[in-house]
Amino acid sequence: MTDKILEEAVSFANENKTCFLATNDGDQPTVRALSFWKADKEGFWFVTGTYQNFYQQLLINPKVEACFFHQESTLSTMLRIRGKIEFCNDPEIKQKAVEDRPFLRNMGLTADSPSLVIFRIPHGKATFWTNKSKNLENPSTEF
Image (tube, rainbow, N blue to C red; front, side, top):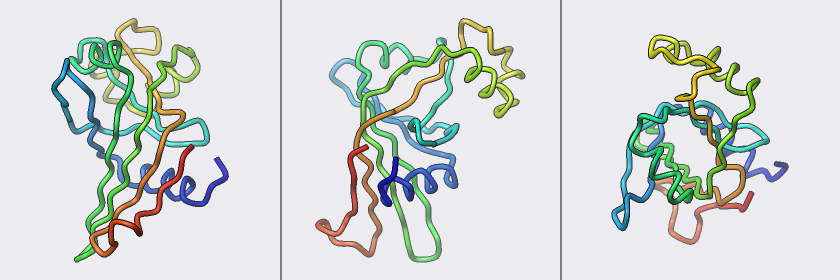
């Protein structure tokens, strides 16, 4: 990831940890708020459990869109990340997720838990929007 817009997207996502993730439940779009894990050169990372309804939705249709939002005084900024997710079963990454997110232990999840699900959006489109921009001025990039 060397693109300037993408670098800004990674930074913005890491600074605004509450995001909204849209999936499809059959033919019905579904969105929910999530506590985002992290963004880095490998993509935009999320943690969930197999007990969540949207996990089943991801298995059926891995196409998602995540929306990050920040309000500062009269300026609103939104970042949308659209792409196809990939699941990650790497034990080291799962361990890092549990270390970074202590509440997972409170839920009875460990790096070895079959219920622990790590996924990321490794490729897609990142688009910024502000309430001061016009439709044609929204910077975006493929990653």
